Length: 196
Image (tube, rainbow, N blue to C red; front, side, top):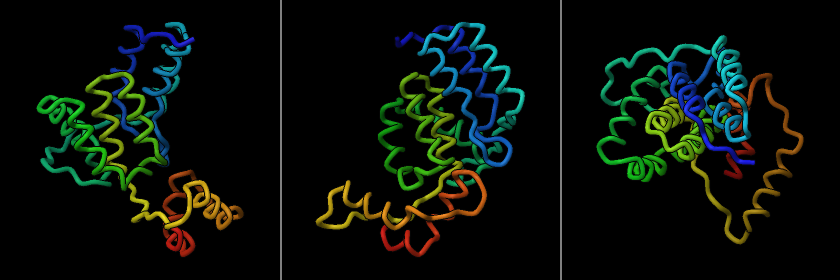
């Protein structure tokens, strides 16, 4: 059963903002999403605190904003600047207008962090918290990874288009790595360019 967020859950999510969106070899920080999901599934305070402690032991610190007035898309070093940028934007024009203005601009880079930027944003919007939304948008922005210009082939349904892509890539092998490595490799393949 879907459980409401408690003050403990929200406090732990707020505390998780001291961590960077990635750690180690470009792995995604799932902590705020995990806390919210666990809370919704009825996790106890003890379980939430244990998850926070376990995850925080290996996460990297967020770092300080570098005073960059116009952070650069795809520049991971500007993540803290993006957090401040989106927090200020929400205070000035509101969360809904920020999302309306930002999402179309970020959409071409949706694969940021192996799609974790947009996934984290979905959790943040459910939470309806300015700080978490700022961190999610910052992750998407600093990890911005365009999939190249995509188009839809005339005369094909979405299902037929996806099945065509599946037929071309069903036996594709990738270099060793994590999902984001595979996404970055995929968009350079000649076959991908044909179907994009």
